[in-house]
Length: 119
Picture 1: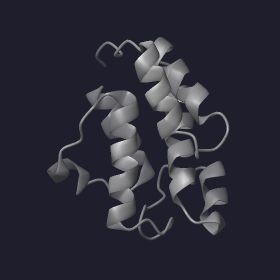
Picture 2: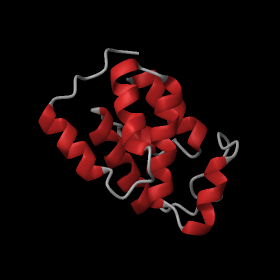
Picture 3: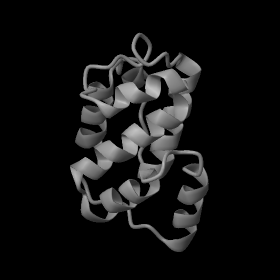
Picture 4: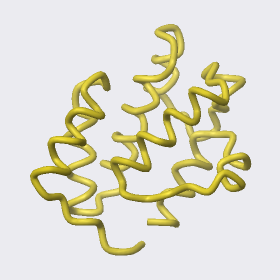
């Protein structure tokens, strides 16, 4: 994993705005991950972003073991919503996920692994 991108005050305000409709703790998890590299904080951030984008009836699925959860089949995330998730993750983590690679990511576990390996 590469060095985490430093967070300046302008980035901090942009991130707060981006994550304002995410569940409580999402912003704090991101900041912890960006400053410490803690994988559990990365996990909590990703779950928070996903919870913000799924329908209420699917939110509870993300509270349990969810590595194998399919974005489309289990969480009802369509391709447009997935693009919104990815854009939010890219902005907050300072990374870019290529479209070809994104098309191969079908589960939460695959997204988590991809991000962890490409930071």
